[in-house]
Image 1 (cartoon, rainbow, N blue to C red):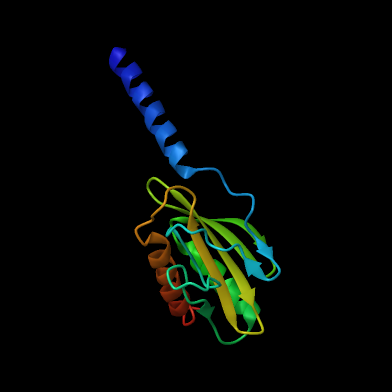
Image 2: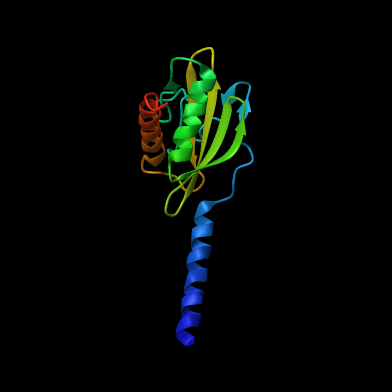
Length: 151
């Protein structure tokens, strides 16, 4: 009985720690004036709309119909085991990326005229992400490109 109680307490502590690492879902994301929210000064964010090199990442380029490309992106994201779609509007997707301990926020904005999908990914907590947001978006870029042939 004591061993069972100890296990329950340990699981409660671990759950509390994991919950604390996820942080609160930011309420200030989204599109304003055709722009995603700028990255903070910390190095745990990348955006295709950032002007500075440390935060900038290239947008996703596509050919063909914009609506089909955006649907392909959503399919790419849904297939990933670490991604949950949180908000979906025409030309905008907001997702959560789940790692073992943390939750990061991702946003995708369709620019039909330029045949681009603007991207942003940022950590909710901490200062540095050790390049995780950049590497994740680059992997999504590869998966998105590979899915052109799967449709």
